[in-house]
Length: 390
Image (cartoon, rainbow, N blue to C red):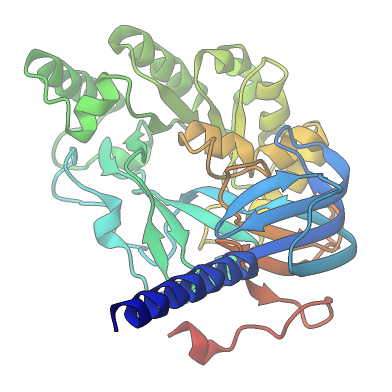
């Protein structure tokens, strides 16, 4: 009897091992396209991306094989786009008119996972968004990095490296109480930073900013605001990324002092001087990130902004990088998002042509290695049914 039981256990173990191998093999996918967007933003030939589970295993390996192959002849394979400044699903919930300093506020608490605006983002090829407080608070609190799961396509919070949002914008000025002037706004910021330095709390969002563990995104609409941003960064040892477009040509030489600069949103009504901001900063060795400002404007305004920046002097490679690997670098996600590289998350978009060509359309979107959205005209499976997302 014991021998029979042992034999059955061995057979069961072998069967489980075989099943595990089968499941492992079925999880692998090979995607082929004509071109792919490299981490530096250049278009490279012969896109051959092997995915195992939710991660990329290899890129451009002609010998790569998988039991599930997706062919997109003539198409361009791109990392999932990253929207650096969004209020999708949380408009009007990301500012506090009563208290200008919101060091403890966290944008993740405003996330509405049922918002249809996230479906629109995915269909535009955006697989990562940063939920960002408005410009109405000098310190608006922590942003939230939002990704998606392939099972439900509901947004989820990713990691704990989201930037702190600060503002030097006139929107942060108050009519009846502090701060009511630009001088008062800057003084309030300095007092807040000095108080944190005097009594440091390293695990708070402000403590992480002062400790260099977190980036600060600073709304800086005027050239003088970029100068103030540089002064604050130097005085307190902060890693600040100014968000500025209007007078970039006047302060572009400061761009290299920051971990990145954010420009945009851009659309067809954007003044030429603003549209040239990306190129102006890039010429001074700045890492340029383009914001789309979802949900304000069209769902594809992020890609439109990159196309307009490219038409206004930014190199096409840097324009593609500005909506993929550059924001990933600024957010501390350079090993997991925004690039086609071994070990990165398999969040991918297949475009019918160059993403900067506004005639190009989204053929497919992959989240965590699974195809979740498909253009019916592409060589792929039917579009995911709405009831499957619930």
